[in-house]
Image (cartoon, rainbow, N blue to C red; front, side, top):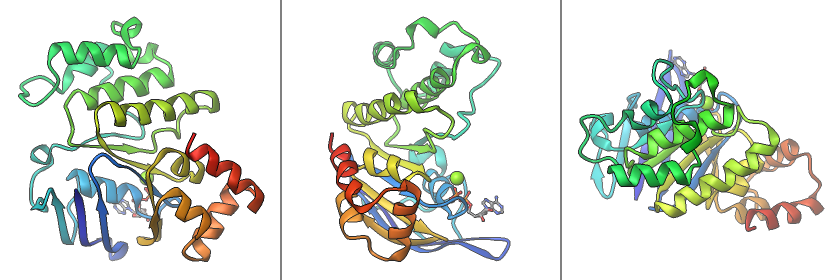
Length: 250
Ligand code: ADP
Ligand code: MG
């Protein structure tokens, strides 16, 4: 279990995360949902260990990891822009994290992952020869190969178009199940959050607005922000919520 206790963060005297308390159970897919600028990426990067919090505590499996380095936490992220190395081909990117590592995938596990993500035909391609969806699978493979204890995904669908989005959603769920991986997904899209995750954390200007299952969020929105944010962005009427809800559990 990952626990956040009273996590606070300011940038230039502006409060970005205001006293966040949160628990994420092992094996769960949790989406962090909120409008642009609400603090989602900051929270993700604090969990990763890339940026420090001002105050508060982070616990993993009961241990205080607040001061543990990014490397020693053993979590890993797929950044929104993938951050692939342009000087390496697809395979070079996928295998990159395994150099000088004891924890990562074995050769056999890596081969299985390459097939699981259907990357075999693309291994020798340069990064600029890959489509958006292929780049994302390479980035996912590179991250998964390091055997992260928690997988963090920052806006994994935002750079992709409609048709491929559904495939990626299914794939992310399959990966979480296949590797029994705790997965935290940042998104500004309510439909993505509600259809991909076991629980949704709704963030409004650095505050937790609601944390619950998709069913709880849909049926009992905690406050007008949740209701507005979800209903407005989905542009749905109450009747259609049930259709969406069925999709959540498809
Ligand atoms: P989100 O991912 O929800 O769009 P962010 O976590 O990126 O939001 O940003 C939250 C707020 O913190 C924004 O107002 C943003 O401008 C500010 N912010 C983020 N990173 C920095 C930084 N490195 N320096 C100063 N301000 C930042
Ligand atoms: Mg962001």
